[in-house]
Amino acid sequence: MVEKGSNKIQSIIRACRIILRMVEVDPNARESQKKYYRMLLQYFTRLRDAQENGQFIAAHTVFFPSEIILAMDLVPMHTETTTWMISLFTGECSDILAAGVREGMATEICAPHRGMTGAFANGSIPKPDVMLWSNMVCDNTAKSGELVMDICDCPGYFLDRPFKNSDLEKAYFADEVRDMIAFLETQSGKKMDYNRLSEIAETTNRQINLTREINELRKNVPSPFSPLGFLELLTIDYLFPGQPESVDYLETLKKELTQAVAEKKGAVPNERFRLMTLFIPPMYLMAFLDRLSRESGAVSVIEPFFTFWGEGNLDPSKPVEAVAEKSYMIPEARMYGPLGNTALETMKQCVLDWKVDGAVFYADVGCRHSCATIKLFKDTLADVDVPMLTIDCDVVDQTVTTEEEVTEKMERFFELLEDR
Picture (cartoon, one colour):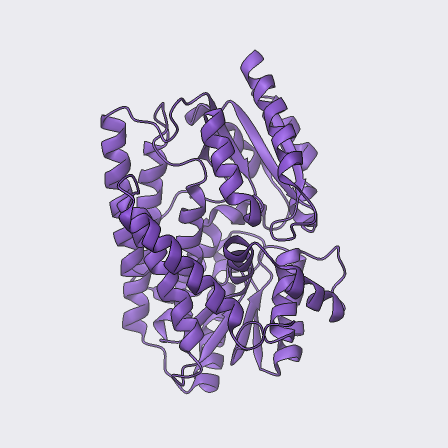
């Protein structure tokens, strides 16, 4: 039976409530973990209730500058992350993936975009008042907005971000952002609060620097952060940029990790393997992967395309320019456009600085952009004597990879690392 209305959002909310109740009574749970689930609960509850409360929903794709949406007091819906959360918290995406196929989405298309399309088409998630998308970071993202506009019968805006990083390209992109603000003002009837945008830019800058400080703590042996904890950092950036609760979460996490380092306490009982994670693991296998990591003494210590921010800071006195600048700083930007030496040299440096033993490349079969880099990344890591395991998978489609397949590959990889 097809779920209607916002039932998928309600399923996420229900799961967050259950997990939050569990961690709140768990004496071993991190305080930051409790804050994280409270934030998720708040985000999706606001989204669920937006239409009933007469609020304007702005759906947007990954890497879109949602600081603009938040500064205008609109309700954001991060489309890919919403699909990820459906898979993570319900373990089931077959219905929305099938609905996406019925809309003409080929199985080769990125599953989060197939799922997003299907969820809008069958009414599993609220339809937005406007669709916002960009060409970051792949062609799936660049094209998905048009289809959502058609399905949801809503207006949309495509934000064009140039590949190159220069003053000219940044100025062009800042003008694109200004045009988008004018579009949102017309559609929503709300005016941009530039003072609030400046505050958000300042808080975002604090977020970035806290993430850098947390990554410095993760360099310690043993590493103090949980095996898959980086997904919390990723979600915080995607859903809560420039929000006070993000800073609260990160400051709490930093304090916890600092204490763990002082006590020489690692995230796993017996750290044996320090891993670099490349791309997103399957959401429906997260609990299994966490358990396998702890049992094997494996922990992800750095993710060069998710958590490793480049140099630079944002200038809150120029908030629109700060939004443009951030788009060139984000870790994933190294994968945008022609892949240059910057990305490859960053990987090598991360290996040295975080004492990486091996890398795990989660090769999402629907992501042509990332899978095209597999051999190049493997050869680059071989230059610094780090083996790379490639796991064919899908971030939300559970028919692609099983626990048994991942267990076999992981165990053989750990054996290889142990014999080195």
